[in-house]
Image (cartoon, rainbow, N blue to C red):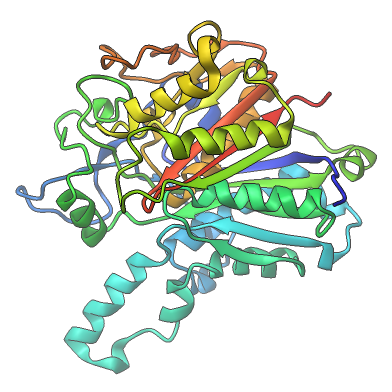
Length: 415
């Protein structure tokens, strides 16, 4: 095992609170919500859920030639758009890395669902000849990293991690391991998702997983609050450029943070509900700490999975208390930015890894908005409603997904 150090040298965002990392960070730290009434498809008055966190004002043609856009599903457009910002931010365009030592690992939970729905209607109404020849490349999830690799000539590792809402965090963790172990020098990673479609929203609504606070979209996502009633679907892409530290320093790269820990687990309990004893979440957080060689007291901030669902929030809080002991209530800061961004499903972990990187770089912890009346037992410092200036020495990001899949990563200031 090479055991090399891995740093974040570029970040890019296209998400519900901004179409660049600086814009999104300004809005997150100001407590601005990206949740509103759905505009991406027409809905009837009796449609059960009419709110989501959409990416608005998105102009993919700024990065992708207009004539090529029909070859991309929306999730891939978002991925390439965010990757462009991250790539430019990293300064790698002028660096001398070998192409086979540079790759892309992306977290995508669902893939080209919008294209599937649209082309299915065409097939039913007009027959198979009406189906686009680009359907399959638009549908499959690995064309997200595929398009990024083609655009930047990345000839190394290239694949998609699909593990529900943990996809983005798994992707960042696996990219970290690839570089740490000497298999790659640079990996573009993160997550992308665009599943705000009629069928997807209806499906999650039928599970009773979504908030139905249709008349108050900005207040619908309220992690850890006793009045929460489900998560709000989001979409977007979040990309990080990870690089071997010595090479990054040698070329004078701007370093946001160092990735030091990665843990993963499975509840092996239920297809959608977390283990009631918090064992899976506890195990992946403990493994991440062990990987980073940190004690619990050395973590400044946790970006929680914090979905605003009745089951997740108290279970995650309980798991944090088990791992962090007395420190959980005596100094640890925890917040859920899903209160503003909604839940980006497979892209959530990528977005929250970027947020942790920016929190470390800028010395600010973003808030949990809409936290007015904490649920009984949810009694940690959730940075309620207002960002806080803090020297964030180390941050943990948690992601938990359907099927009981869990992952945590740790980022730190460079020492």
